[in-house]
Image (cartoon, rainbow, N blue to C red; front, side, top):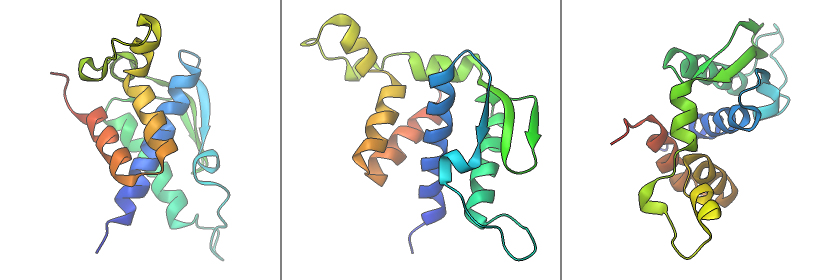
Length: 142
């Protein structure tokens, strides 16, 4: 049985981290619907399970020290959020093993960052590639 909820988690984490990286250092409001689309709540107004999972991923990333925020907007968004220094450094630092000496230094540096690897993994639509890159985000630097 496939762990589809974990694949969704990796998608959410990549979207959250890249969204905040793209707005860094400016605090922003991060909406669940921007990451997973508009999902209808159930008849009692309870958000869809996929919506809840994405919102929970945001809170988990904050608890684990990857982002900070000032408030939540119901279960719709986290407000005034920004990457922590730890997350920014992880995403912006080139991975030496990925450095390509055939490219100009500035391009090679950017292509070797974890942020670019997340972008590439999302664009590839490969769940395995995305899982590997997201897991790399959580590993302690060597």
